[in-house]
Length: 459
Image (cartoon, rainbow, N blue to C red; front, side, top):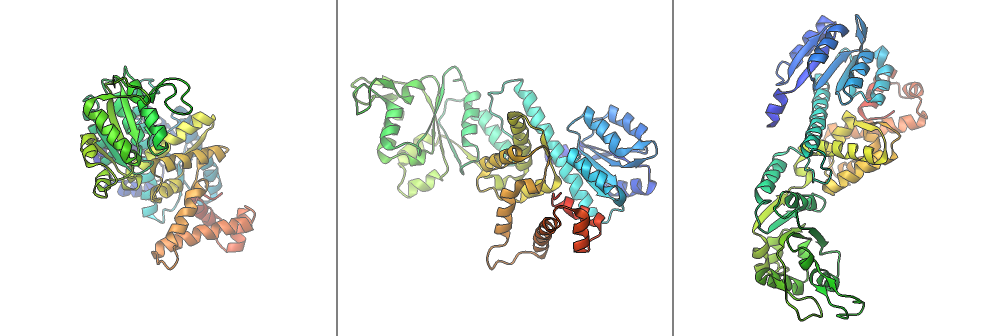
């Protein structure tokens, strides 16, 4: 399903008894591809909620027949992953802040002063909803097989990669996977194995850059007892043990010229000789290689054998860095959030709008692996509740440093954002977390201060 088709399939429920607000929101969403339904009271909202799976609910806090916040709690108890935004007046902001801490996605204050902010919050809520649904669909498709590799993401690049993996996996051809460190090359290799005709055999993995030439040679070829110092017993190598299965050589560019030559001979002759032995062995294994370098460039530079390059580059898979497929960041973050909640037996989340903005702005030099570690750290250190930008301080500080490089001129809007975040952080530290005192010191009305604090995930 395309992004446009996904948006058209989305449904939004707006619950508000005020005719002006309903007319205003109807105008805001008129150009949206999502389907919008309206309710004037809690009874009608319950009826529509029971009949339809809504992607987002926008609820006024004060309804003629009930409290909107209580109604949202009731709805979210039935559908825990329900995305919901509360519409509140300034007098009820504290209740809304508490609701966000309980897992409400966000709140908006009336009157609506900034339509762009409203549209941005709704867009992020729908994006998070899509991410949860994608993860749930993937889990259902696995049908309880927790060992199956999970490819998260709906970017055009990831969809094309998944399609190519499905095409090449059943074919007994050598595959070369290229991509920066942390992009998921090992996951792609495992996915090929899981969909191949060789699952009755083993998949053996070795990182060529992590072993010395001698240790890598003995690992691949195996050795006889007494072949070298420390060889106390005969040991089969990966060439032999991968018979009928798949051998995955990661970081193939780190293989020495000598072993490149030896590997080429094995691939040409389908035979090998263990170290210290005179016997010639044969093995039927499928080879998958991976590298974080452009192998063609390494060939031109004279660092990699050209004949071996053509031998292993039968089918090439290119995995783009995470910064070039931003659409995959939020689904991946949601996946890791749920994974580490289960691992640590915690209930951390959801991600706040400010956290989502930060995750998508960050360039992720360490790619998916860095994102995984960032979410793991946030869950490990969090007592429970929503994950705000303040809980992602490891990347937040990096982003500030990157934005404010020495002598660099950044946009006025970005500089203003950086100032506001820094100022509010220092202000709350000075006031020891007391919002009334912070409002007095800053001269910012308390209700406006709450709105600014919410924007940056400060509490």
